[in-house]
Length: 492
Ligand code: ADP
Image (cartoon, rainbow, N blue to C red; front, side, top):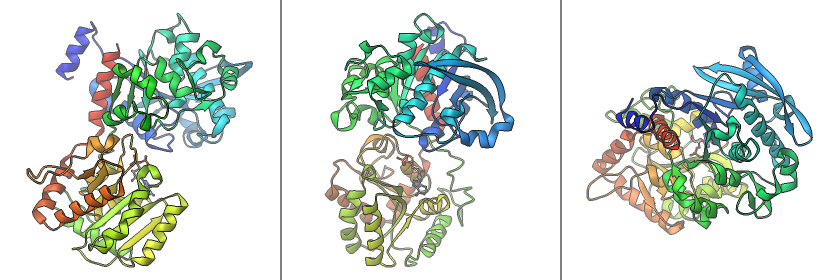
């Protein structure tokens, strides 16, 4: 164990690291719709190095039942109060890859989709919050810290401190991690009161009211002992009205307890040296394989076979969040004034998909888009491209830019959230840097950054330096796990 942790433990008069219960709506390898599942699934394994026993409690979704039903151990069942209802709660235990999962079983709430949307989703996760709190005393595990993720678990600290006063749930410490503040779980107060019996005095702007709704995430921000988001820059940004989605007030008030921890990527899954999805492999010392991947990419997408033409790429949801409107504004001009090629893999808003189809017609052999989801092509694009565009309007953390760097595709990003924290801008005087960046959400600035990149493309020496630095950056989960471990210790 690191000396810093030993010292922190000694200061707190403790021998051992705390036990932690992670609470999340989805978790790898059991269930997944987004990056949250990767983080929650990876942390318990990464914590082993720090001596933290972390277990996960998550709904027993249909997808989990279909795959793991034969491997679970039934621990107990009881009934929880959900307003006037009595709701069945089964607790099943499952061990996968050495990680212990407690599964909250109720066919009525988790018998089909992970997220039912709208009010039904509110009821699903109000039930889950109640079930988790009622389950804590009966688990074969005694956590000191409850780590709640996103709005689906954000009601726990408020319920614990207002409805379980004096109970063991009330004495635990709660960490709330916000993976994307755009999703808050907003419902009518009557509905929430009916489900969870929340006292009317908490339906005020000081507690959980926001714009006439009861807001689960806000309740978490008010009552959690500590709050963090998935990058230090995003933690600063969400304290402003532009990014804060109405929660900037409470987040400013709690800024002493608010921090940012960058997510990591799976270094084994994204590894150009061993990636089975690539036609050739390479590492930062031997890039010949990358040239082969580029040729294969150009070939498979019908682009002109020209090694000297820089390939710019995006693998993305096509939404305004990802800055696609900026790309639409500048791409023709940059194509006209350079020999660049442009590859896009993604899907999303129709207007952006249509734009790409038309651009492909206008620039035959130089632009190609694949509308859809394709894991294998994504790997080939990261490996075969020279530059990676990510001009996001906001980006809590962002994984794509880290994957791109790992594969030696130089990112061109807007300086926001996790992009600012992971991409070091190229400095032409020192030769340092891992990418290119611009600060304002402005098409002109994106264009200017792309031309800066194209200028560097002319120099082998500069490009080798950039690729070397980008591929050397460490974006593994160990760093995130260490930051979370430190946060837990601060909370005790
Ligand atoms: P998001 O906001 O969408 O979570 P991230 O950059 O954090 O953005 O993560 C997106 C992840 O999904 C990356 O690993 C990216 O490669 C992958 N991805 C996005 N769109 C596609 C697609 N169409 N096909 C394959 N992978 C995709």
